Length: 89
Image (cartoon, rainbow, N blue to C red; front, side):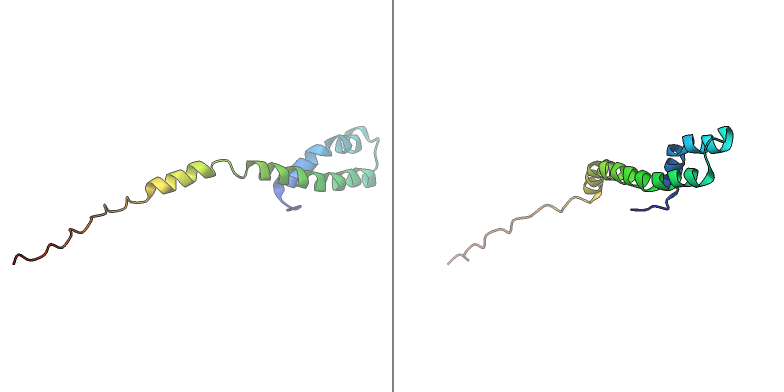
């Protein structure tokens, strides 16, 4: 689980945006509380995105496998050997 991925940090920032608003604009919250809420949001965002990646990991694989399977050259036709006939007496 990647906690330092940019997508995780941006999602955590979005989740903690009410606390950031209260700290920066309304000034109702202190810095320690704001950072604590952001740090709590980071592992939650990482879990959410990991679950999302697990759910969507298989999409497109079947189509890609079929494309690769169709891209292989066809096997040469199998030629049956003719039976050996006995020489005439």
